Amino acid sequence: MNSTDDRTPAGATRETPVALRLLVVGVLLAFAVSPTAVLVTLLGFGPVPAAFGTLSAVFVGPAVSAALFALGEKARDDGLSPAAAFGRGYRLNAADVLKLWLPTLLVLAVLAFTVADALAQGAPPWAIGLGMGLFLLVVLWLVQATVISSFFAFRGRDVARLALYFLGRLPRVTLVVLVTLVLAAMFAWLTSVALLALLGVLWVAVLLRSEKPLLAEVRLRFVEGAD
Image 1 (cartoon, rainbow, N blue to C red):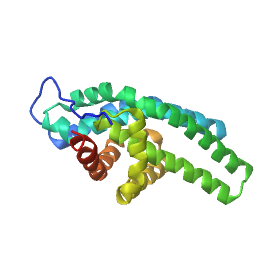
Image 2: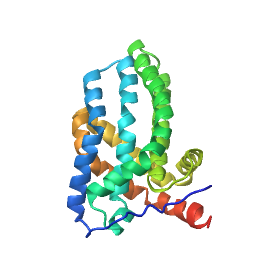
Image 3: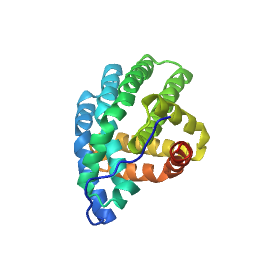
Image 4: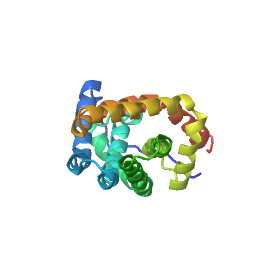
């Protein structure tokens, strides 16, 4: 694998308090994902809306990656302001993240359409459960891939393999990520997608904390160990 995590800023500023960093990154994250929140809210329910709503998440990938980068230790250690760190993370990672998200969202859109249609047609519970399980498994893989891409410049196919590998390699991390995804989905269902977008930085912060073992092992085995 050819990799590097040498993403050093041109300038640095005094470290920003954690609360202020969360606030600024949260506002930027909410703004970046707002097209998805609006589209999902307007589409409503049904097989076709489920598919198009899934595709609209294309805005979420680069935004979450930028937020992860902005909240990461490197951005803080380098003294980047929250806004500068978010902008740098978006600029550095958007292309790599979209290479993962675009084909994966197409797969997820097909699964979303299939599950929604199965629900509408009264399909057996096992079939619906299977479809939902596959959907969630793909989302788990995509989250892991996004986290890796946010901090390391691996090739796309290497990120895909690492994300799949770590799903089983670190089951406790995978379980925590699964719980955060389920809680986020439940929160959006019970309240609104817009409110989830506004509070999304808290989800990103929890995700980043839970993924520390994964990031540490990637750095140790595939970056420092490759030198």
